Image (cartoon, rainbow, N blue to C red):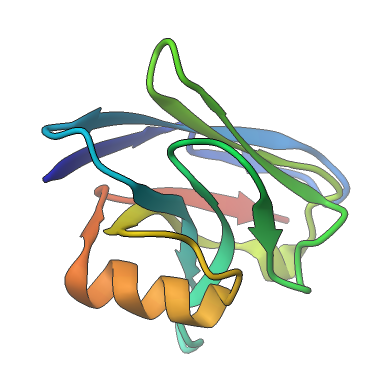
Length: 129
């Protein structure tokens, strides 16, 4: 079982930056694939970035590669998403989410597995104008 609570919602101008945080609580010692998913009105849910709670490689969707960076602080069990060069099309509700097991690098698979079978936070709104 995993509990996730996002923070860092905000509105920024195009070209700006924003960092989202997610406090993660693990109820058991296990391997989890954790990351970020976004959902914009009228658009499909999109897996943005993922990594293992044990560290190691991180994976990115093409739409955010080079602009977004996922990281985690193991001491505080906090997951971050640093977002740079934000554009209006990045406007969406952002969720941190996790599923059991390893990350495969397939962000679409990560998003489906985390959303349908895993755990997610309450979401935080990001608006870029």
